[in-house]
Length: 178
Image: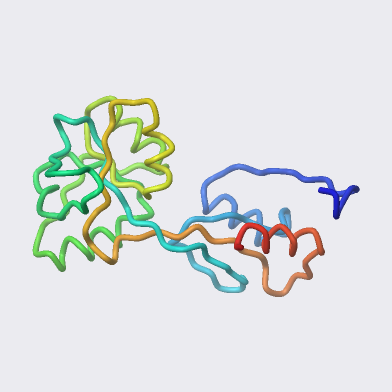
């Protein structure tokens, strides 16, 4: 803020696809997004990957040992899985590679909705670790990272490749990406 005292900072909230629409339309200069998404025409800088996690109430989510141990996909077989629609192709691929059917109880349009269903005890949410950790604080929910290397998400800072960037946007992107 001290480097850009006249800067008007405005936050637009939405899911990745809503923010991509705003970014491509030129309504916003930068977007903080979560993979996967089509990145044509964008300059993207990703933060380190984070695993998807299984989140549920203790009686529903089978944990062996410490909750920090990766959970094998086999442990999810037969459970009422709730996940964000954007991860469906990733999940289908990993379950297929493990020789398991992917049988969702519910597919939703937001990770927070999946977590809400888990908190209500109706299913096991499959969501990115950071979202899970933030949501689970102060609740009875437990989480375990999934033990499938391909089930990861990344937070990505994106800008339109063909559009000039302000010095403030460049500084913000650099600060977010380290």
